[in-house]
Image (cartoon, rainbow, N blue to C red; front, side):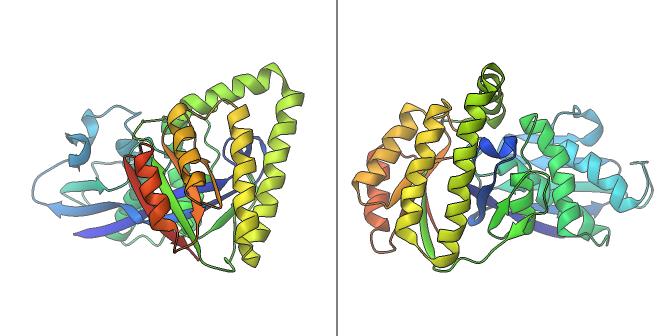
Length: 314
């Protein structure tokens, strides 16, 4: 048996604008992760087991747009160096997927599964694979999830380091000057990224000049945020989070649930708070001192958070 894991991720700055060429900042979240086990047994076929979603099926019976199946179909021919998935290199192949990452919440659950599947299959068949290759495979599968993904999820999860990302440019990892305490508040409301991305695109198509100006403002915030993270300017970083959230509200991707959590975090002493990811539900993030984090966590629960993750960056 061979196993592999991949962390969740959270976007700190730049969601939606990143699709239009602006920078975004994202970090891995190791407190939640996807895990994949690959085993070769007696018998025939390629079987996928995903108890979290009540899935147990032979690969050939699953549709092309089933995300786990898509990850397997794209990866196996490369690691086996054959397009024939009945190749006798293995007998019965079982791929078991579990995950502690909440689905449709902005934490990269689908991408983390894809990354873990790619790594586990590559390791099982002794195929040397780079982070860049893992990211590329996962990006192709992300198209099944999101339609027109930015590429940030697959990159930050595959590289598992803080990331400054511009679509079409080489990814840039960077150091955080001072540890940052980030609270991730889950609204409990599923929020498929595809829908929010499509709605923002419709706004852009209706008035490109206006929205490209908004996206440029988000990009400028992201550049300042990277510098603040590198130099340890936490108070400034919090103010930038608030500014970014206001622009996301203009894009219509906030929600009542997110607004309650953002307001609750700020009232409890967070230095800044914003939605994270596609919006319309899912998660928000708050920046706090380590000492104040428990108070902010309590406030998020009181404001309706179904779960709160506290993670340290740097």
